[in-house]
Length: 137
Image 1: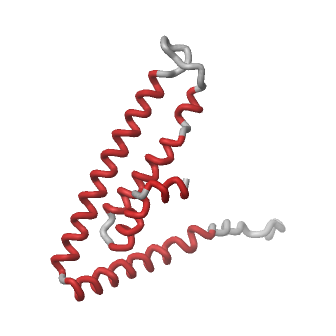
Image 2 (image 1 turned 90 degrees about the horizontal axis):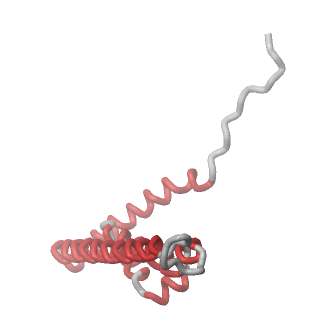
Image 3 (image 1 turned 45 degrees about the horizontal axis):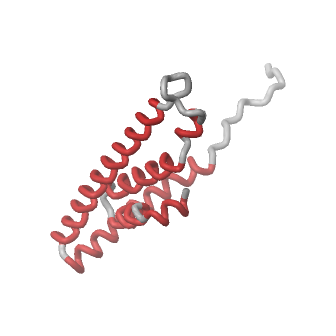
């Protein structure tokens, strides 16, 4: 006996869920291919030194951006309205300033430097350039 209701249909997958796994796989294959290409041209030790230097630089960038973000947060919380010495500006205007986006892009650049690979290192180095960060934000 049927009730006349159609069977439940599965919701459609979003485009990002459909294309993200193949895009990540292609990116990883490209990174490995580029690493082997550079290793055959310059040597394995050179590639290892490039990857270690990228990881060290990435950790330094993330650490400094995190310190700057924590300092900005501390200053914002000290200037909250209703507290002694508070400014007339609302807290959202202080917290959503230009520095918060710059710190986020700096942290993204540091994270890209931490990820092993030459393409991610190049993207991370590009994000460390201040005019590029202002253009993106």
